[in-house]
Amino acid sequence: MNVSVKIDGEQGIQARYARIQQRVKTFRKLFDKRIYPDFMRLMRDQFKAEGRSSFLGLKRKWRKLSPEYGAWKRKHYPGKTILRRTDKLFESLTEKGSAGAVYHRTPTKAFMGTRVSYAIYHQRGTEKMPRRRIVRLTRKYGQHVMPFFRYYVLTGDA
Image (cartoon, rainbow, N blue to C red):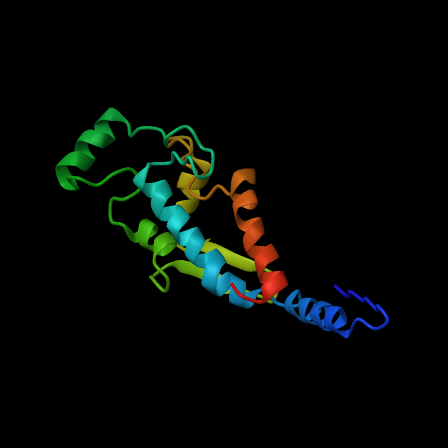
């Protein structure tokens, strides 16, 4: 994106616009310091509430386990909640650098998620298993992160 402003006698304003123009070329600092940590916090909250999130505006929890599987899980993995049998999936979405974690960024895009192979089956559901969306970035979340971008563009601070 190229922005050009010229106001005669206003070098301070011109210098500020030049800095803004440089900042919009890369958001890596913002992704590293603000967006990815915020994503991991969001995922922790999502797992804790088993899918419900007032932060995201999600009112319903993930669908309950079937009675048979729920009984088996309580016996073999006592205290483990939905989608947290081994915590492999949970950790990949909530701990930076954990096995299966995905975090990659270009100057203008960030990719966050998981490489855990079975995550997609939970995200989409199957014939035998209901969908339990793990990652849902809603409009409300977009409204939450926009001020981070505005502040970064204006100040250079994440």
